[in-house]
Length: 350
Image 1: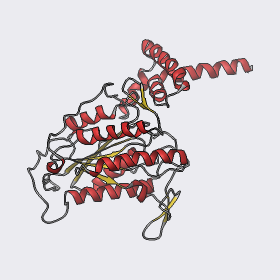
Image 2: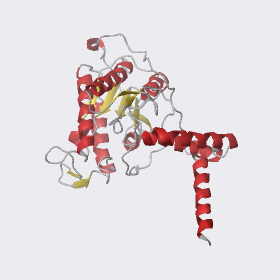
Image 3: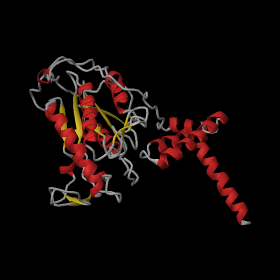
Image 4: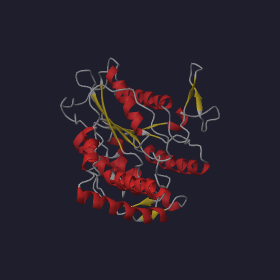
């Protein structure tokens, strides 16, 4: 076949693929770091998506994604005012109810691509533990940095009002080592500047305060260390702001991701040694994402903290006003028995 025909066939096939998956293409480009490449690429992707929508070429891919439970509903692109409790921090942790198998604890896990396997593993743990009812959701490449791509505060406000979790587990931040934008895509702070830390702290405070409720506790997984020294500086900055925010918010419990996945020197490690002496692989090749083995360590620690908070399994668990057992059972996570999770694809995007 003449090479001109081969190239033409290749170009046609590529264009057809892009039009079939135009929605995913736009979401992928919107997640790119702010810069000239994104500025040039985004209008092109949006143009392809408009043509695909006009011709309904992307409908089969959208229908397949919905059938597989991969349908994406982006939260609204606006600033969010949580309906936070007006109680003072000292009065914001009243006694929690007694958790039983008859009225299990409503647990919801949210996150990025590292939060995905965490949610899967915690859901699997709940299959064996009737006192827990776990659902999860995730958005790849998301975080608090880019509400123009995915507005987590808006989504979390919906989670608080619709899903009504009693324990909300959050593993977000792996993609936040970049410019902070507002929902309209305007840059408000750049990495490495004092303004970045101030704005990131404000966003963490907003989430923690907005999700506060008498019957709810938050469990935030601190970002594990990463291989890149440049990225690690941002991880330290993020974790510092989260630690300081949580310090005077007793409804927030931190899960020490860096310590759980650390090597002998307390820093980044490709392999970790378990208490029984067994060594396991902890990282994918990108030096960011955790393997299933190391994610299991985070999952186990989170489940332990939840059990400790509600005194699950103790004979005299503190009791408050029991919740309606039908309340908050929103089908926001995968249904049915949880299958063992697969490792997420190695990528620098979380």
